[in-house]
Image (cartoon, rainbow, N blue to C red; front, side):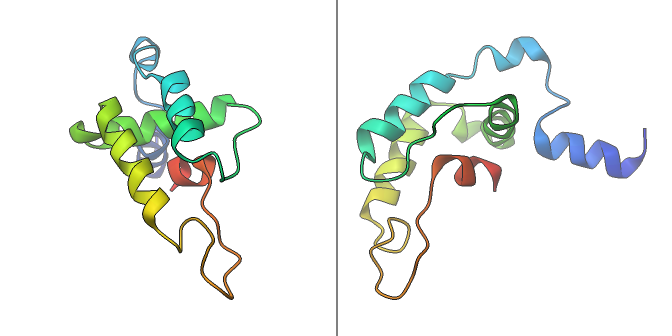
Length: 102
């Protein structure tokens, strides 16, 4: 496997064992997003690619491996005029797929 492929797989979380993926609370995180940020776009589905992106963000740092972290992040987003699309002249508004893809 090329070095570039290893880096890409690590970024996408593809090198994480599948059983570890089962420990990631995807549904709970989606529910938190909906509960805390109902005014923002809600994911219509949670595809394998989106699951991989969330998995990568989850395992990137140990502090991200708790529901409390995601709740705090979503509350921070709620307080941001820029991230919630309230800044005059800006069309940007964050959504969960974009957040976990980044």
